[in-house]
Length: 335
Image (cartoon, rainbow, N blue to C red; front, side, top):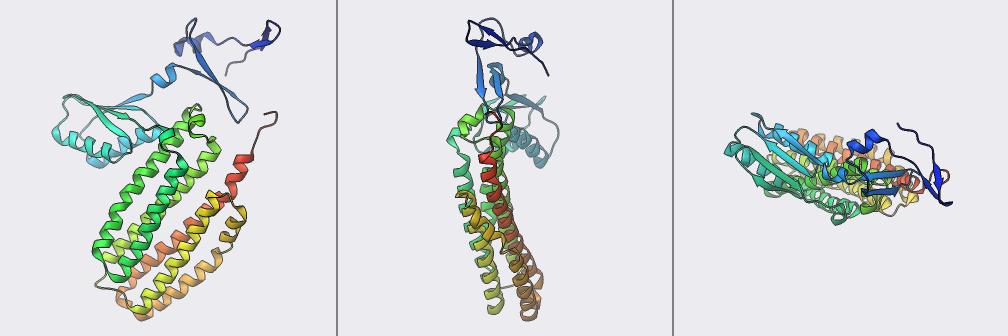
């Protein structure tokens, strides 16, 4: 940390000197322009031009399987790098195919250059083009449809629909990774606050809600997997119970997301008051299922556990709905 004394010139202008070592490292010379950006915390951010120009990284490619290479690329995508270079002595066709498949699984990541030793990926994502509230709304819409279809696929043993639900889980992953990247950029570069029109504490809540919705989608896919393990449709009484519990979880989720979007703390509290009742209802359904269709007990148990967890994720979103307005209203002393 550097300390400087504030001075005054011309009777009205305050100024401070820049540390020489830092200025030289940032490429600042006489006549260079820098941006001064006020922040909600009360701080003033000084941003040299070199910050945005150095946002690149390199991956030294090794004999990795697809999953390892995907983790390496995604880690840098989430970290917020605009240019990701994949470098190797000789990149094999199979490795190129893997890089291409990974780039297609991430929003806005495109291959801009290819040689025998190098593949250069550019992120074309602009925060202004993907407002986080719109992204979270889209995630919720897809997730809600996945959950409804997963329950139908389970009760009716519709294998085609079950596979379709599992395929849609990838769309959720792409959007949630985009939100994670935007949040990382916001943490690294405060200049992006103006672009997304949200402070870091506000964006954190959207990031957490997106994460909870991703888990809901994962459980919708899990219910679909359980459907594929069944020998046939579940019996009528068990089907009715599962649909009833699905309706309960859906109500929790819908009201929780609405309370977050509208910043309605009264509604959020109403949702949280439903928590104790949920566990009791699921215990009753589990008993009915074991008595009426013991052969499907394992798959039914998986479906019910997922529906119960989905309700819990709804409660977590409701808690975010309570916290978000507090973060929005915070202002430091003197700001």
